[in-house]
Image (cartoon, helix red, strand yellow):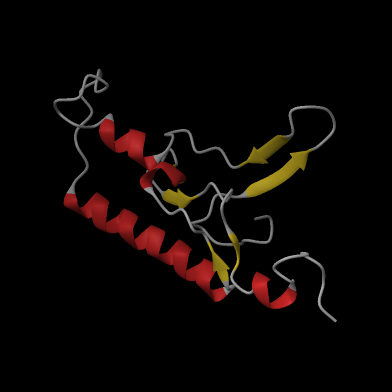
Length: 123
């Protein structure tokens, strides 16, 4: 993730591996994930305690374009996210949506460099 350099992928700043648990230092996305963000803005939601207005159609178009740009960037690097969902898209303070949670991601061409059974480098 650290090699990703685009506006629509959550930035990874570093990993602290001394001690337990391992800490991952990432860009602050203070509005949380897109799933919870949208649920909290439903007019009939109990979570909408401050009467936040629901997103407009333009918000949805903007977010779809941002997610699409992020996925296009990943594809250009031959990288597959494998778990794109609203729960894995993060919302910044300015309502920019970025793709995060790469726990299931992998390089598309992994199988071409490793033997499936032994996971050893091919020569």
